[in-house]
Length: 157
Image (cartoon, rainbow, N blue to C red; front, side, top):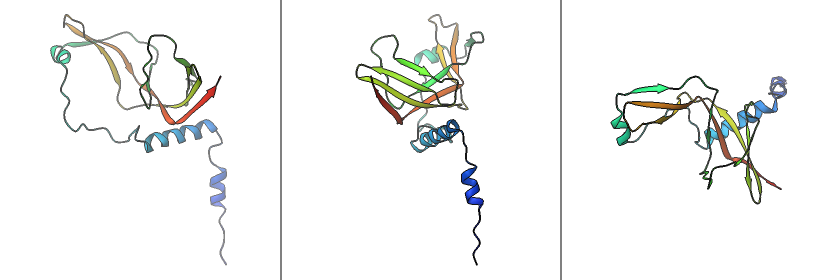
């Protein structure tokens, strides 16, 4: 006589009851399956040659501004090119693991679901002054918010 185990039933019942954790895991798996994120560091096919500005400032000191609040680098699945400066939308729930971005369009709003990623590398924005005395590190990003095409919905106004 075969005996059925209730361990499978318990595992299903013990899954994360928190919908935020479930959503975060789903979005992270989606990012890895679409090759937006990778566990393996990227290796360039050919070495990149530095620009003339970087070569000119080779060996100079990098100055960093004073401490500041955390800044987030946003990663989109396409090109986001607003025509002019100004408000493009509204960011909600940045304090959570899954922030939501609402982009405003004349036809309505687009809702983008994202997830916060903590990359191993820091991304820097550098400023090279004309004098060539030093290089200014304007910002560095420890956190990245990735948005995915599969997690977008249109909201009519």
